[in-house]
View 1 (cartoon, rainbow, N blue to C red):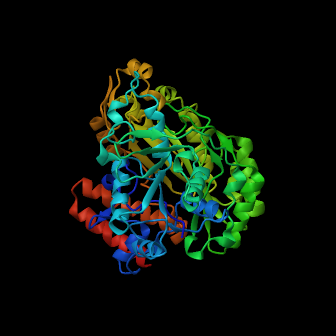
View 2 (tube, rainbow, N blue to C red):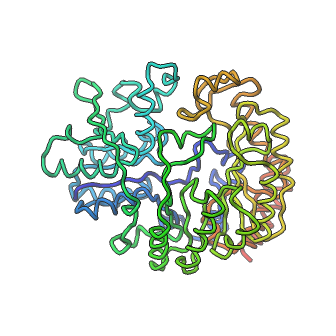
Length: 524
C-alpha cells in the first residue's frame, strides 16, 4: 500500500467555539441527540461507527484522486472510531500517512491525532496538508510586519520553530488545493527520488531549519472532483453524504478568514448533476449535504441548482447554506420541490449597525421575510448568529433577539439557531491592524476586547439567547432529519428546550415533567 489517508476524528464533540455543552440537553455528559435519546430510553443499541452518518468529503475525494492515478491507499474517516481498521491498514506497509486539517484547526488538535498515529507507526512518514497548513503559510509570509503573527505561534505552524510544535510532521503541503502535490510526493517516494524537487512543500531538517520547495500553484479542474462511486468501498458510503459545488468565497465578511487568499470558483452544473445522480444510484445515500458556504449565491443559481436536483436527484433530500437574499417568493417552491429540508443561513445579527460593520450586505427585514417563506413551505432552518462583533452592545443584542422572536412559525419546519461568541481570527478582515484601530480592538481568538465588550461578556450574552428567544431550538445534527419524521422531531425539540430551561431555572419538578413527556413521545 502506498498511503493511508486520515480525514480526521469524529465530530461528536461539536464545533470548537459553539455553546453546545451550555445550551444542549445532556445526560451523563452526553448530548441528547435523537439517536442518543433512543439509547437512553433503551430503544437503540450502543453507538457504533455505523451511527456516524456523515463522512468527511475531503478524505473520500483524496482517496478517489489518488486511486485513479494508480496509487493504492486506504481511507480512515474517523481515526478515534476506526483504530482497528487503521492497524489493519498498517500491516500493508504504507509509505506515508496523509493527514487532512480540514477539521483540525490548530497544532494542538493535530497533535491529538499524530500521537495516535505514532503510537502504532512510530517511523512512518506523516504528510500534513489542508487549511491549517495553508493558513500557516500565509501567516508566515506576514511575519515581522505590523500584522500580529506573534499571537498565532502556538496554533499555527512555521511561526515558532520550537521542535515540539512540529517534530511529529515530516512534510507540510503549503498549497491551497494540494492533491497534485500529494500525488507527486508518493510517486517520488515510490521512485526513490528526491523530495526536494516536489513543489509546495515545507519541512524541517535535522538542524531544525525550515525550508520551502518551489511554489507552484495548483488549479485542479472540478472534473477531478467527480468521484467514481463504483470504485469506492461501500462502507465509505453513508446515508447523509457531503458534496462540494464551489471553492473559495466571493464575499469579504469582516469576521471570516475563509476567503483570504482563495479564488472563488463554481463547479459546472453538469458535473454536479452527474455526482448527484451517481449518489442516488448507490441506494445508500438519502440526504445530500452541500458543504459550501456559497453554492446558492444568487436567485438564478438557486433556480438552476433546484431544477438540476429535480432532474437528477431521484427523490434525494438535501441541505445547504443559502444566502438569505437569494430566497424569494418566486423560487421558494422550487427549493421545496427539489427536496430541500434544511436551509442553513448565516444571519449573524439582527442589528443593521452590526450587519453593516460585518459587511454582510443583508437586512433584518429581509431575514424575517425569508423565514416566513421557508416556514410556510415546510423547510426547516439552521440560523447562525455571532455575538460580540466590534460595536456590539446590549442594545444591538436586544435587536437580534427581538428579530428572532418576530420570526414566523407557520409550517411544520423547525427553526434552529446556533450562537457563537465572536472570535478574532487571523486572516479575517477585522484582524488587520487598520481595522482594529477603529474599535480599539485588541487580542487574539477568544482573548479579545474592544470599546463595548470583551469575550467573556460576549460568551455570557450568547448563552442567554436560548432563554430569551421563543420557538427556536439548538441544532443537534442533520442526522435527526434522517432518523425521524419532522412532526415528531419538532415535539422532541420543544421538550428538550423545555427541560433545559427548567434546569437553568433550577426547577426539579419541571425537569422531571419534561423527561416524562419526552419518554412518552420517544416511545410512542
